[in-house]
Each structure stands twice: as C-alpha cells, then as structure tokens.
Length: 306
Image (cartoon, rainbow, N blue to C red):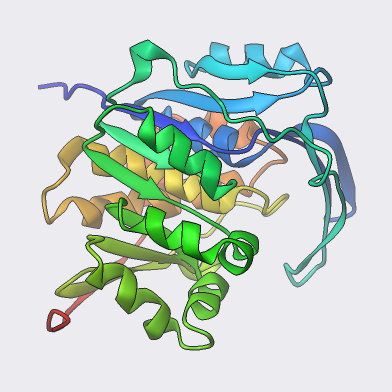
C-alpha cells in the first residue's frame, strides 16, 4: 500500500549566495533556509515554500523549484534587494562571512496561501522570530510544528524565541546554539525547552550526526559519509527537510523520530555534495533510502524531568 505524501509548509530565508569552497567559487547561486529545506522535503512530501525575494531574484530559480515539484505560490516578490550572503569555507570546515546585506535586505513577512493553511507539518526555518510567529499564526492548525533558529536570533531576540519554542513540537539546534542557550551548558539550554512542552530537541552535530532529546529517552544517529564535500552550506536545513518529511508521516507516534533521524542525516550528507541545492534536487527516494541505511542509531533511556 502506497502511503499518502504528507503536506508540509516551510518558511525561511530565500537568498542569493556566493560561496568559496575547495578552491571553487559559486556566485549568486540559490540559497537560504527555505529552498534547502524544500529541496530535501520534496523527495517524500508535498511541500510548499514560503518566503520573500526582491526585484533582483532570477526567475530561473523560481522555475527550478517549481519544476522539482515544490509549490512556490507562497514565494512573493517585493521592491528591494534579495538577501545575499558571501561565505568562504576553510579546509577544516570553518567558515567566514565575507559580506552580507542583512541590514538592507527585505524584511517583509511572507503570506501563507489560503490553500496551504492547515498543513500536516509546519517548518519555521531560521529567520526573524517575528516572521516565524506571523506565519505560525496564519498557517491554520498544523499537526506538527518544527522550529529552527541560529545564534544571531538567540542572542538578539531570546524572549521572542522562547515564546515560539513553547508552540513547537520539535526544536532544532546545533551544538553551539545549545551552548549559547544554556550559557555554556548544553543540558541547561535543552532542559527548559522540554519542560515547557516541546516533545523533542534535536541537536545537529554536522558530520558527527545528531542527538534527539525527548522526555524519557535520547537517540543518537551517526552521519553517512558524503561521496565528496563541495559546499557545506544548507546541510542543516536539508537535515530539517528530511526530518520533517519523515516525522509528518507518523506524528505523533513515539517511534516516528527513529526513522526521521536516519532520513535527516541522509539529506544532510547529500546536500554537501554540490553547490546550492543541485544535489538535493537530483535526489530520488531510492537513493535517499540507500543513504539512510548507512546511519546507525543508539538509544538510551532517562528519567523524565521532574
């Protein structure tokens, strides 16, 4: 029996990236949390992208996403500049932001198309918490809400972010973000999120995989080895796309997270094999399943927080 593909709404930044990695330079390629998420999620879900771009955003990128089966009716164009990011990756994987127009780029809140309200899952990708809150308020009543963020918003908009976390079923962090939340203590950053009602906090660990912390157990997953590493950009958002698409099929089953983690790390490892979203748009369900089988899970029980 073929299982129906869940409907997913993903909001986040849509950007034009210039990436220097491995001696190559890719200029003004499609980037941002929303396209990476959607490119990964579309393999096993019916996904709609919600975001804002400027007058300078190439129409060919809209066509590219649409032809990949992604609903772009929630992508709106406004007068002004598209968000841009210029990054350089060193050989050890560390990165330097060389330029960005964060201060002058568009800050409009995207609109959720009426026909896309009430999805099975809503992904609030890394962007301004006020935009995330607005989309959450206008998305109907999704069964699953997954929230992502970044250090910039944790440091500058902590109170707004805490309110959003109370509405999320799953919160995604990387190791540095968890440390910032806990003021140097990762556990102290994670514990309050769970205590305030979130079901899972998933800590992304790059090429080391991820750990999902629940109320009574923690699950560790290893990361499959990429065939090559060309561009680390967007791996975390691709991870989210794989995770949400798989979680949405079985939520709120307590076992849904196990297979979701495998699919998440598979997507993350695929994302780094090309610049921009090219490798993700070429991925097939069979190829993702094969990559996911390389991941290994370990689970440990722990007592619920008092």
